[in-house]
Amino acid sequence: MDGTPTTPGESGAALLVRVSGPDRPGITTDLMDVLDLSGVSVQDLEQVLVRGHLTLAAVVEAGPGEAADPGRLQADLALFADRHRLTVEVAPVPASGTEHRRVDAVVVLGHDLETALSPTELGDVAGAVAAAGGNIDRIVRLARYPVYAYEFRVTGADPVALRQHVAEAAAAHRLDTAIQAEGLGRRAKRLVMMDVDSTLISDEVIELLAEEAGCLDEVRDLTERAMAGGLDFEQALRQRVALLEGLDLAALDRARERMTLTPGARTFVRTLKRLGYTVGVVSGGFTHFTDRLAEELGLDHAVANELEIVDGRLTGSVLGQVVDRARKADLLREFAQAEGVPLSQTVAVGDGANDLDMLAAAGLGVAFNAKPVVQEAAEVAVNVPFLDAILFLLGVTRDEVERADADD
Image 1 (tube, rainbow, N blue to C red):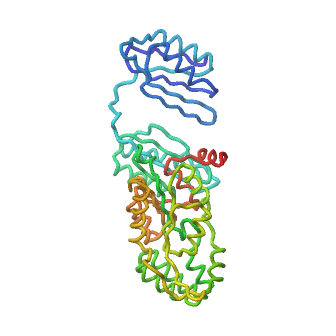
Image 2 (image 1 turned 135 degrees about the vertical axis):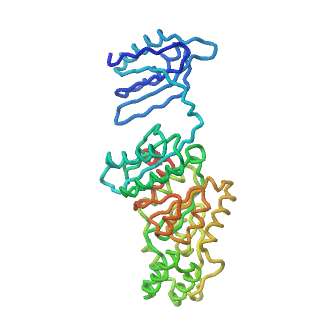
Image 3 (image 1 turned 180 degrees about the horizontal axis):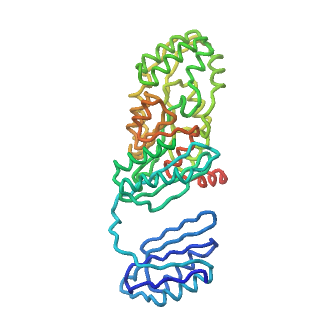
């Protein structure tokens, strides 16, 4: 036998049964049979598999109106350990009183596609948890592609101190981190709304149009000032569109064909849709581009500005209400209400100052490769070039993404 159980202690006390060793089919089923025959009930259960090595832990107590038989449990676990060539340990569990303590999920994303997170990086995140008075209950690797991602399940940490210390560790190692209260609310996010330019796509569509019109430098300057928050968005938009006057539909189509999706965008949207999310875009760009994206990706909602076209050419004006900073947040609320989704179960993703209100209104606001003013204000900042890395913030694992792709 690879391991002999320790003495389980007094009958009726809570016991921790810990099983470890090479994984094989039937271990969990067999263990449950052993526990059942010994007259105990399972109060807690957790199982982790790392590269074929199993760690399974169960907290057991005598069932209601029953008396557990420690001797029978010890003997049966010894046979179980021999049968599966496992190590089994049994120890008393003191009353911890932690059942109602705060639980947070700390997600850590690396930046390098080729390199795993180092022991120093992971150790400093663990140290940040300890500095905040927290304890790590569990660490799970969510992905190793397109980046390495880990989730730390933390109990008992002071939330303000946790954010501060984790942020310091992240800054020291150029890691992206997100902290959310664990629970149904985190995993119940049902509506995801995105910006388009420099978020869902790698381009700024008005700059694609400006190249066609020969006014790229003027438009780019106005765009940068608006996205950094130094210029009113609507004012900047109208000034830029005025520079496009006279551009024909063929030029719009050429610009649209040059539009490129951000790496991971298809996977991000496809996975969300398969998981039952409603997905949409709200853009300060133009319907000529967002309509194509909605059709290509199967988006549920797409709202953008409409360029005025007369006799096949742009007039230099925008029709209707401009989709600006305030309008984006209003649209998020409207879509959430239409879908019957509370704002707390929404996610917003953007990069520019005109996304700030939308990010603040959502249950989770994510600054994606964003301007400094947005990164400072947003709840979460992601600075890797892969849009699908945001899935890991929602607790989705890479294995789940790949299984969904295989089932398609």
